Image (cartoon, rainbow, N blue to C red):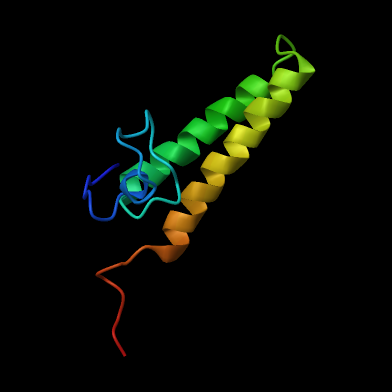
Length: 90
């Protein structure tokens, strides 16, 4: 989800006049919550099932698998880096 803070948005720092059509994972303006990470993981599972289908050609299956790996990586990064307000403080 884009929080659209122009001071932090990656496309503003690159002197691009218009926002990109979709967010870039390296942008500081992206905010994800646990629901977003779950949705990324679920979408990755769907893509993997499609890639495993006999009806999908090899190159397309490879592309679907790479996309699924990328989405799973984003979800894993969120789960690893998230701030959990219920974590005990030492």
